[in-house]
Image (cartoon, rainbow, N blue to C red; front, side, top):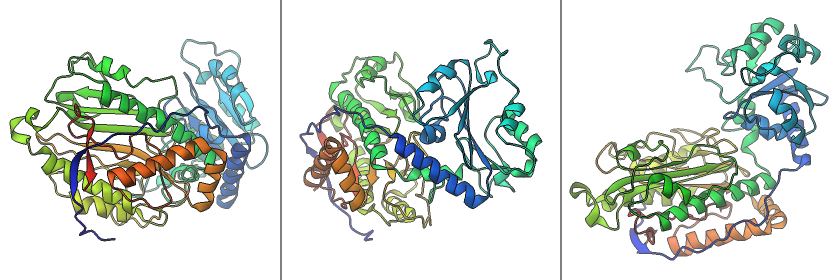
Length: 467
């Protein structure tokens, strides 16, 4: 890894190709859900766990959806998985019918306290009785999974700290004993061995499907927004089609854009203002940030060297990140690349420069200082490096998704999903021949604006490239 290679970066007018949009939607098959359940039960056996209960609500559903395909809509849900037998899915009033669509066969159990307040509670038993019927009791070793686990730097006994609701945890602790109720989210989310990090061809193709829509939405905004539009009007250019969101939509200009996270408002797009936008669906997120200007003359007087001081060093770091990432590369190596090129406090890079993505926007990140976690085939990751300068220079951001796939997985994707594979290959060609980023064979770009970064966002055809 040559960290002294100062690639020359330049602004260049580029014709962004139309990489196409999906005409078919890849699906996770019943066979894959059954295989995931089998894999989980293997881990349960290795850890001596009798039962795992997976908690889910509207925002925190990824572990449950990964296992059985169910995602709660208005309510919460509990998935009970024992070493053998058909899993049980506890749902509320409105979830009972919806659960019939669950791809993995489950035993639906009505537990009405999962319902919204004010709805009927007269037709379900107590949680402890339901658990007892599922074989949960004294002497059993229980795992609970929701969306987060903890470390020894945070708590003395992190395995006993649970982020799931008290009604679930308290009931289990009474029934089996506090010491026998464990946080097992790491089974799904650990940055080295979490089950959800290793995606099948079908799952990766589904993520690429989502990425076409998120990146296509940003492309529409880049080439369609005009000063005088409200942020709401600009956001309609994203053309959300009803596919489930993994995070709220962000699009702001002016002072609020400094914070990155706000939703659109009636605020009007104005030349010379800060700008940021982001769209995220299950398995995909794309973001761009910069200035609503046509060129440097429209920037505030004190930062007309914005491209030279911030944008070019930033993009140089991104180029090296892209060119180095691959199977076997450690998270620490990616961290070192970014902090070598833009580690100066001026850039303000604080979050992990790269992370895993799944049905949830951020699963975990292997990218950290001294991380020796190697990247492996099947992993889906975000190119996510966000400067937070805290200065008048605002920020610049390019966030897109990629996957890593060895030769066998690449061949499977190409065979099962030729349309997906064609788009991936066209993006690789564009990144290498037009933008100038040389990718390893295993790197599969999912974005329809791959490495496409216009720092002057009202001149979307003028982007940063390798000279």
